[in-house]
Amino acid sequence: MVKVTVEYRGELHCTATHGPSNATLETDAPVDNHGKGESFSPTDLVATALGACMATVMGIYAQRKDIDLRGMRVEVTKEMSKDTPRRIVRLATEIWMPSHLSRDAALEHAALTCPVHHSLHSEMDKLVRFHWNERA
Image (tube, rainbow, N blue to C red; front, side, top):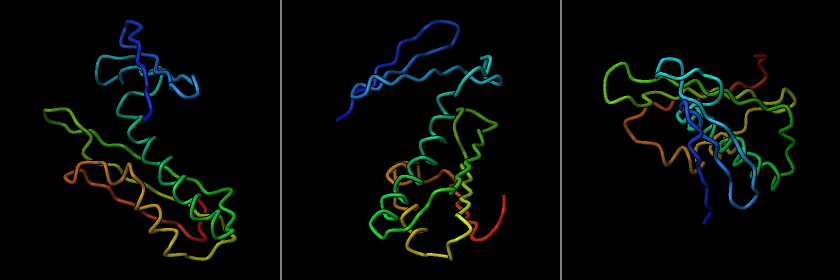
């Protein structure tokens, strides 16, 4: 179990503290929802969590198989609903694999087994595209 504490700082800014490490991060509401966009929004953190989770689970698999993933890049593009209730309707993930690697279906599968991917609502569009031997 992990405890995260969020303190509201005013003007739509929050500070979150990760209990085990005491690491902090700041959030702000996005410009299109009354904020200044000065930091990650809460829904940006969902996109961030997805990308980091996929990279981490792939990293765990790669460590076991002695595969060097340094240089892998994950980009997640978040799309919000245009109607109410306001919600994330699409997270499009693009993963650029290091150029020294050939396509590996097991690495792709690892990304799709990340806990965040499995925790997202089934109605959300969760496109994932892998780039093997391509430059971004």
